[in-house]
Image (cartoon, rainbow, N blue to C red):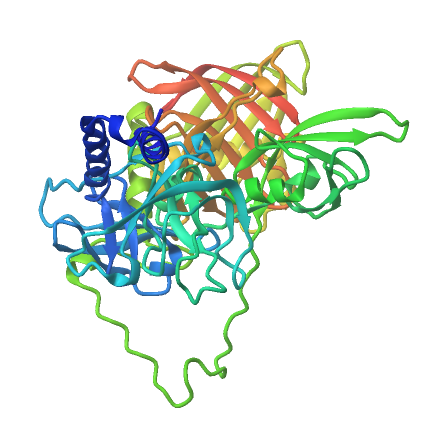
Length: 597
């Protein structure tokens, strides 16, 4: 039992029944527990001076959470104070406007400097009645950056707060009565153990003139965890949408969520239809639209999630379907401001942009659609280094020759296949220049592609038929492994954050048994074809690639497994499964892989 629950019971017992019999040592011990808790949560609490709010450090190297509305509308440079009384330079790293979340980084004043940081808790284990401790800088009272700490109770969980002005949607959030006021925004909410369970951000202030009403809301830390990997990649994040309109129907004893309309999206390609009932979404049961929106709002756009569907067929039979759907962006695009539209007060010049300190310039790079491209490049290079540590192919842009056995189009009988990828060659002597080319032979049938040819028929990019583009996918594979980011000119290689990777279902495995793992994502674009690469964060092993010839079509997926070392020590994946849509095109086993035949 929490010491605070014990303290409350003891206090009530003291007042109402036997006040003289409570040992003073117990009261002193409980008081010391509270003081120790405050000492534990105070050091990582940040006073975000530039934004007039709060934050909380989550790592020793200076990463900290705060609210978007605290730092998102200013420049990249911020000033942050800590309870040690010192002011630190900070920089914007990643931004989530809809979720009102931002990741910043305090810049260490010297090498090997270690910041105090909070331990991340599990907000799914938070219940009404639990103790809540809020820390922050209300009304900017702490001129020495020492935070104000308030105690209260968790009043509710899984709350939904509608967006304000099309942003700041608080989904599946935590409600508490611990006092928060203007200036607390972005600060931490802790449980009785001193674990970080939420980021404070909103309150019901409408009738109290922006003064605490005892009804505050915090972004759950589990939602923050889902976005953290992509925030660290310097991204401006979007929240997810299903690609369908849904509604709650109460025509039975139990309410149901029915699909009203499906738009062109992966949901449509996976077969979701109007009148389908959504019974599970991302592993949680669904009976109301409020539950659906609560879960949807905690997921970044682009993630794949499992969805359980109940459908009544034309024959009147009830069937249950399980599908894996890649979510789209659910955010409305902002209307751009016209050049002749006034901004600010009439006749008032725009305030000049503040100069960026040199220490911040060193860790900031501006790029469209990124909050801070500097951090994206760092994560991209780190991921590629881990990948090359396994494959050791970088710089070896020589012909590839692969051959082996495989089954195609779900046939049981194995057949032979071979793949040849030749890099472009300049003209030399009497030999004319050649373009990059890919040749594939499947059971005696030849396919050939020059993937960067200017007047290429788009149908050739989808060869072989039914694969979704295996030839161009193989070419992109060689580009990444042999040339790295240079294989995709014009900034065509970026880090896509972290998201779930879903391996193909194994024989005899049910959909409910299928498990995902979190993987780093590299996104590439070349010749109008985009690819999405999944890399295991710890080992650097290449798990999969999805190559999209057309964003409105299913990609060609290649799932890699069974890495085996060749004589040069390269761990090359020997088993490939090629999937297009809901069908397996081929299961290939690489018997021989010559990097320089």
